[in-house]
Amino acid sequence: MRKKKVSLCLIALTFCFTLFKAEVDSSDNRHIDSESGSSIHRQIQYSFTLQNKTNRLLNKAEFWTYAPVKLTSTQRCIKLEASYPYELIEDDLGNQILYFRFGNISPYDTKFITIKASLLLFDKPSSISVQDINPFIQPEKYIESDHPELLKFAGKFKDQKQIKTAENIFRWVANNVHYAGYLRDGRGALYTLRDCTEYMYLFVALCRASDIPARGIGGYVYSGVPILNPSSYHNWAEFYDDSAWRIADPQKKVFMHDSSHYIAMNIISDSPKNPMGEFYRFRFAGDGLEVKMNGTK
Image (cartoon, rainbow, N blue to C red; front, side, top):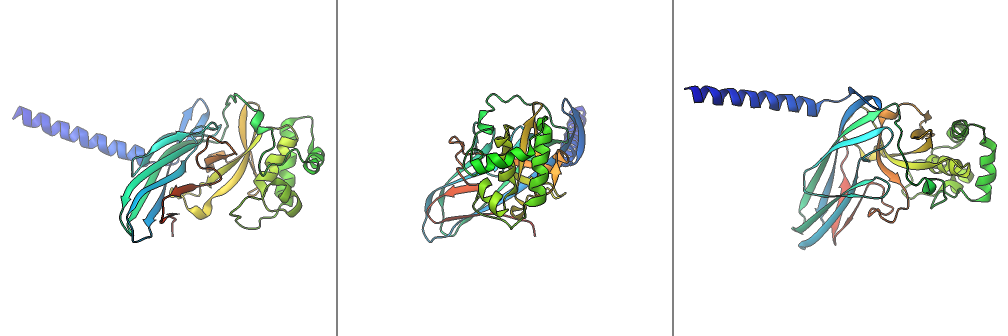
């Protein structure tokens, strides 16, 4: 009888612990104090449909997609889960890529991959040491910061204080560039200066032309719904000042505030170590394979 009572107690304790863990894991918008100040805990989820569109057996299929950036001045990715086993790849910028391999996918068979992530997001950016800042002040594809036209134009925004120069650039881009809808292929800063379509690239290029380290970020602005929608994918910028990366989103007219609303999925760069190449959200390989990111209705 005593053993039976002990067993029942253990079962009850296990049940209570399970409920407590579920409550902690499913909570959202919880403020947590850390060395970076008050933070918000968010849980996000996104999913993909992979389908063999042929009447043949698919012997090998590969799929790569971004997970939230592990560490920025305003974001910590503290937990990742997926419905299939994966290999985690990190590039030299801190991007996290989930790599999935499948074999023997039957004709017309479908697989669903669901990814969940737990994040800490901060409105107050924390200091981050950058070992090599040089890549963030150099020109690269779509960021033609060494072009004479951009260099001359950047001089109009120069101020004695770097942060004021960044703000001057932000205000001009926010007020003078006009959104022309989603562009599948990037066109770059110089194109934007002349034709006014891509906010992020122009802001980054003008910052770099002014010797301010800056980078492009791809991700999502949190809208209260934990399921990420592919149509909500968004690009913004960060510039490095006083040992921290600070958000600048000229398209949404956000400068150094509401940082906890931004979920960084991709530090955009031409890094050769990133297996995603120029794909912003996901890529795949497999003869006859078709992939789409699922969205909310």
